Length: 564
Image 1 (cartoon, rainbow, N blue to C red):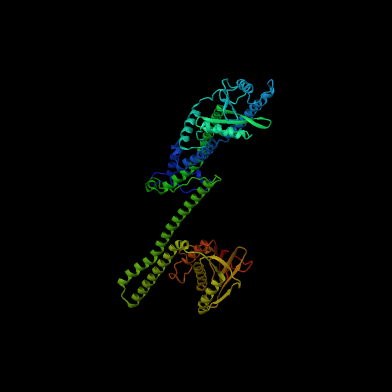
Image 2 (cartoon, one colour; image 1 turned 60 degrees about the vertical axis):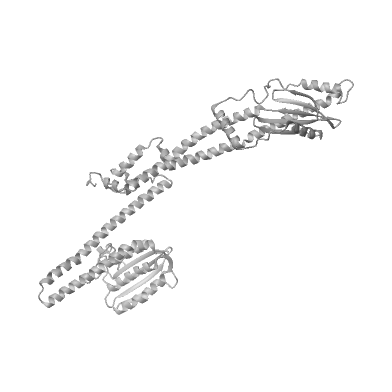
């Protein structure tokens, strides 16, 4: 617990560790979550986009259905065919009337004309229909407009109900019609239209016209009156079917009702979806912002706790796990830097204390041999400080340099062979036998050649430095399925068993006989480079098979494993 400011401390937690005491950051996240009301989700830009896009797709679908309206065209086509059939039936009656009259007068006789007028007057027509009978010279013999009411078989009985939805839609439709011409037909000249229909019917062919005017549909059908297969007249029927408009109005009403229901369902589902996305992201953002804000850090000195959403099987769960891992790695790096700084300060204090003691003693030294000895100590400590600072600087820059440098594919055997030729001469000069056993075939790996070469140079030079005259150093490599092992062995004194887990720590050294000439960072840097390449490195002592663990080792072995 961190009680410096009276606030319980908290660390980044993983997995089920969320049951630990809540920090001020957790409390602040909970407060932000509690402030969200039912409609506060609309303040989220992400939630607004989700709702808008879902509504937009539904609106476009309904607008497309209403604008294209295939039901209207189908209904108009059915009315058109029915009107043509009615005109043809009346034309057949007109053509058969002279044969039914006494004396069977000709079609153009006065008796036949009066019979046609009586027949037309006897038709039962609704108020929407008008019948015209034209002679062959296009003169109108008789015309009659319906005066009766609609029959029960009509598609529409009375006008469509007026509701707020349909009235609003009609207003919108009228406004759109003023801007978008749509499929409105131009207002025709009645005389020209009748002349065209009469001319087509006198050719012996029934014809029709469907006009989409501002006041609704207007349909006309013309059928020829035939006698002995020759056209002798024309029957023209005109109809303004209000039933179509009323049915279309009713249809739009139903579509809009379903649209409103679908829109409410879509908005509701969008809110649920947005809450499952926006709210967790808001919690993650709040925790991250509290960790970034300087004022919040003064109020909450504990570590940032990212909400654990690992139980969600989606990208938000992955984001939570990634953020928690990132924060954990960041705090690990901070802790490592703090420990590194403490280790550096501790290592620098030793030569500084020696220097202070040597300088103080130098002031009171009388004999020349004492002065020379103290100067040697000062010179040794200065070199030690210089080496320590240089190695520390290189180690502190290593992480950033490993990230910046570009990896490339190279032949590991060729690199080890070049190093062996150079370092073998150094071993021979010391009287140490150098043995290199490398595969002849190339072993290609992806990485930073210069950095990995630095690792092997450090391992080989360490092995040579621990050997005496007559000892041997051996380097060999073996390729396995998905990795390569590089081993550096020596016949030196080996490594104390208690130190096998410490040799890769910073500033650790077993060189008691050569104290001060090594910083103890070489193996730590080598481990850092190998792990940056996804590999492993370890140290072990060489002992015969089935040998006693307490028996003295035959030498030391360092193993580097790298992925292919």
